[in-house]
Image (cartoon, rainbow, N blue to C red; front, side, top):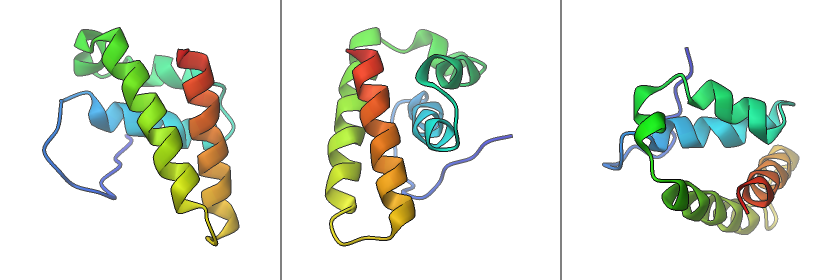
Length: 89
């Protein structure tokens, strides 16, 4: 089971799975297999492809901003988010 509740908020049902994708990539998965894990969530299958691409881009920008002067692990997550954004493009 995967849960990512670092920033609890109301959002589309697929957002949790999308957040997992970044962490799975940071943990060594490539983007396609990470998305296959996310696809186990029914809401992911209903997500709009364009919305997923926009979310990936936002994650890449968010994590790039977080890494400024931050811990090394956050740079790894930022790199993962950038790889996912590239995959989605």
